[in-house]
Length: 280
Image 1 (tube, rainbow, N blue to C red):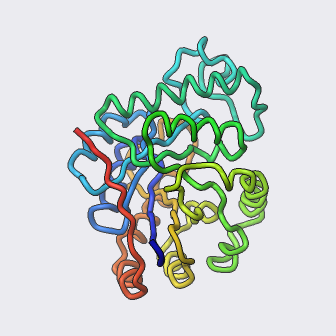
Image 2: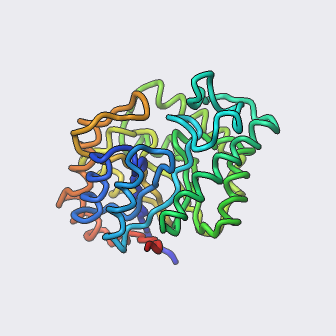
C-alpha cells in the first residue's frame, strides 16, 4: 500500500488511572489509533477493563525492564534488579548471556500476563526505548514471532528530519536521539514485514502540541509512520518513579483531540492506521 499512513500510538497504558483515561479519550474523541500496555504497571487491571469497550483501539505490549518492579521474583532476574528488587538504571548495560536470559524471563512474564488478560497484542515496543541495541531487539523480534505479534516498533527516528520539521528540543534530547540513531542503524533489517518505516515524536516527547502536529503532518513522508505520544489527565501520582505525568500529558492530549489536527489529516489525505486486536 502506498501513500501516507499514520499510526498514532500512546505509550504507558496502565501506568495510572489518569493516564488510562487520557488514552481512551484520545482514541474516542481524537486521532489515537493504538496504545502500548505495561504488564507490570499499577493500573494494569483498570486499563484492561477500559480497552474492552474500544474494539478499534490496537493494544500492544510495552516491554519494560527499566522502571518499577519486575513481575519476576528478584532472585530469578538478578542482573535486572537492585538490592531492593526494583529495576536498575539501564542506559548502557552490558548485554551478557546472563542479562539476556533474565530479560527473556521477564519479557515472557509480561507478554503472558497481557495474553492471560484477554488481549491479543497488535504490536510490541519498549519502555524508554531500552532495546535500541541489537541483542535485546533481536530477542524481542524472536519473541514477537513466537507469540504471534505482527508488528514491532522501528526505533530509528530520522533525527535531522524531525529537527528541521518541528524545531530544536534541546541539546540533551538531540544528542541521545542521535546516539540511538547510530545504534539502531544496525536494526534496519530486523523485524516483521509490518514494522513501520519510521518512528516520529521521540525527539519531542512531552512537547507534541498542536503546532508540532501541524508541522509534522504538512511534511509527513510516504509510507507507514508511527508517532509516539503520551496523553493523560491530571489526577493520580505516578507510582513507577519520577516521570512527567500532568501538564505535558494533558497538553499532548489536547493536540490529539484538536479539530485542526483532524482536519489537516483529512485535507492531506493521510490515512490513520488502525491495528485492531482481539479482546475478551
